[in-house]
View 1 (cartoon, rainbow, N blue to C red):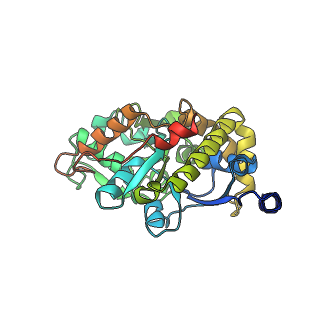
View 2 (tube, helix red, strand yellow; view 1 turned 180 degrees about the vertical axis):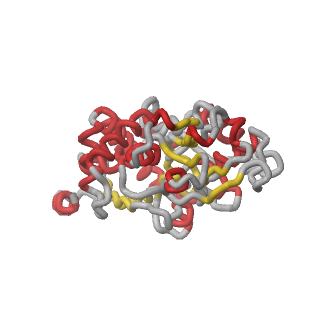
View 3 (cartoon, rainbow, N blue to C red; view 1 turned 90 degrees about the vertical axis):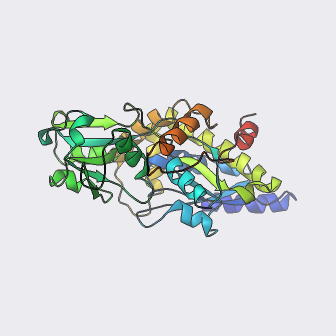
Length: 324
């Protein structure tokens, strides 16, 4: 891909055209099918066709997209809306410019033997929760259930990005994604019939995940906005290509996994699940989904995720032009 981009740049210079514009994208997690649309857009030349040279930075347990963009390390980041809105309220002026994911993949996965059959059974149980900005949907849900998370109603176990607390029976339930950690439980030998799952979508507490965010001051620059229009247009083309050809998309992801940690079977399965979450999105943020997310984050009783309805936290300016 780098050789192709280099050739394209020399060709552009030879014809007197402008050199490709650089864009750095920071992912929320490691290279995997969760981000297939961006890798497909790069591999298929969609970014190149838009005059862009896109660098995709993998994330990880020690990488917070909000911190990366705040430090100038990326032009655009993939993040969950609860994290982005919480950061905005604290002074980091992030703006959602596109929303490739229509649905949430988050859920709690519980061992049936723990006695959890309904959310009412959470009381008195230990629940595994991801932090680092991923805890907000869970905390909102517990507030909705009127369950205190200080140990008096439920005990919160700060969960690593694995399912060990469930497998080792340190927790009745753990946080999982439909496309990743749930299958880690299954691959560890636990049968689906021995599990109870609670999808945030089904429980009415889902919030938006995997949106594209930029800094508000940069978006005020017409040249930067134009660059993001082209980036979003190419990215959404990549996402729809990935949905239509999930196995090919998974293989493209594998080709970009510098760690060699991912497997073909896992990535193909993941891409199949991811396609369900991006289906129905053309990239434009659905205002109803946004309002639902904001309402959920403000409904935390004495300890809401955000205390006031955000102003200017999203825009259709980019997707309106990208979708023309």
